[in-house]
Length: 238
Image (cartoon, rainbow, N blue to C red; front, top):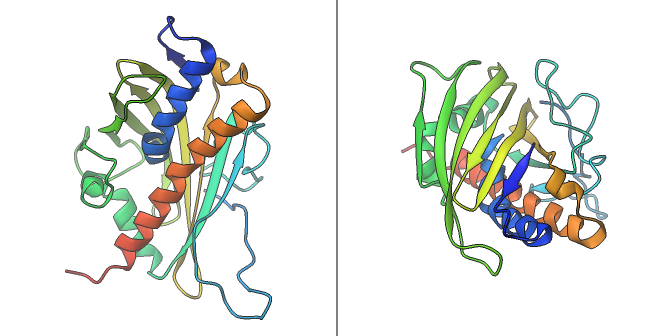
């Protein structure tokens, strides 16, 4: 992903502004295995399923050889990567339908202001959609709204999907972000794995704690997304 921001802002301030956008927006933009967590507590009892996330500021963690969809994946060498997993007590068909009915995202995702499909018919390997999400005012940037255009790059119905695309606002522009999702049937329902990569010269300029902070903020949105997906998929049919 290439990221650009206002040239009047120092690199670190621009990166901080981008990170603020990440926590609300980028997790919503993007098949394989993830950071498997131990489902048993020390007393042998099963834990309550929760989002389990791994952030990396080096592009190494959160990536595995089988984390792909049709041979496509996120960038393991990206400046910042993130992955997260959750167990959902619902059939994989239900979880898939909720996730890919993108025009209804705004009904269960607070961060989605507007969304529209740019193609007709069923969600497919050639689908595109445009949506907007707010970026709150911060010490580093004014309040903004990102317009994100996502294009599906590969899809295997009920199994995996990967999309990418730009996010554009007045203060922040993200030329490309890649987001990957995998859905696996389990004895109790569905395990969802997601991962995302950001590859940006601006982020490459950050080191140590600064880059780790951006990775942490990038990951927050993935966890929020998965928990909302779980709540919607497990809700009784109306």
